[in-house]
Image 1: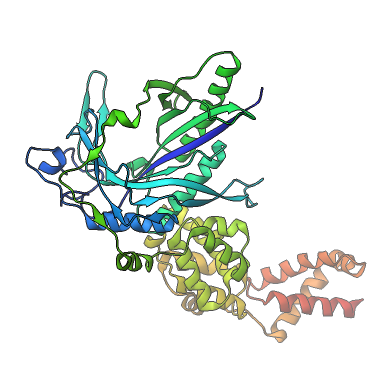
Image 2 (image 1 turned 30 degrees about the horizontal axis):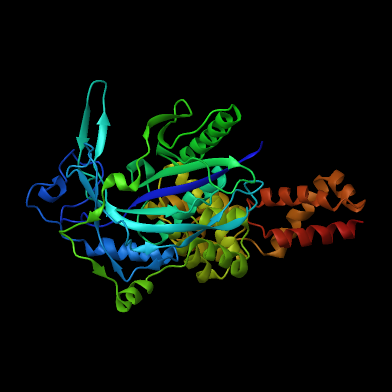
Length: 484
């Protein structure tokens, strides 16, 4: 019997705000434990929450990025459960009136190779709701310590329908969602810092069966690749259990990345176990058309819309767009440089193949680099105008530009690197190379045109790369034709 899998993901994204969702206490990562707290965070008697407007506005913005329906009225509910990381013994969340309902995310599946774009498809969403984050438990050999610094941080839970079918689709969805959050300036989505966390619900069923199988939730996955690996294991575990005559139970399982296995944590709760009820300290919020309009005006171009524009307008290949698109700052850098010199393909190649390589070697980010978009545009202009060759640009100019921050034109002038277009100067050099290399010359005369590349190389070497390659090619051919 053949089986098929159905996957739904619950992604928690920390919303970047200056303060926590229901108090003015600041947010941060890496601070001394339990220093970002106050009576509201710790749930002291009499401490009342005050809603953070920025968190609500960014959640509305997320809904628009996800093409969700934004609720006209949204409210907050108490999700009741006892766990040490929740100081109030309940979490303020949203139950039946979330900010965002429905929606969809465009994903790009892995292609047949790293250089080929894969299939695009849309993943349907159930909802996205705003809630407060909980604290963090730190486990040791004999005890556990709780840090409430994270408690109360605005958290947006984005839930898909069970429409993902493979671990690769889940991986593609998480990458696409992270790009949307970064593009919208919602979150950095750094999973190592807990800014993006994912729980996966997965079930399998015999092919042809209409009802979904028993749902199992997987937790403790701390990377996008970890989610994919956990799903690969869990889907196979469920299939083998059923094929072996066993049965599955609705449960929550953890992921052990060191052993590459899932393990039982507890049996899965139902929504009624949390005894949801409206929070009596927080009023419902009405989201009117004016408010929506102001936020709608801030919605950026979505990543894959930008990718399609780069294909259509700039004729960039997938190998380039796949590097540019995930980083909106890099895209802005590229577009500024491309506009300045009107050579988008050349600009993109210098950014992806040279600039990013140097940044990686030095462990720098783009914002830390001395190179600006004007540097790249200026370098491309010098090449296109024939002032310097590509080889000189790469070997002599770019490195100096990267290190010193000097503009490329100034470097070329100071080092005397301008390309030679003087035929009177180049002709004797070309003739000398021809006379010194009768073998390649004979090959050219016999029809092997590629042999001229060796002669060109000798001329470029003799001129220390300053000769115009196109002029050298033309002059060598003319002199060889005379010899023939």
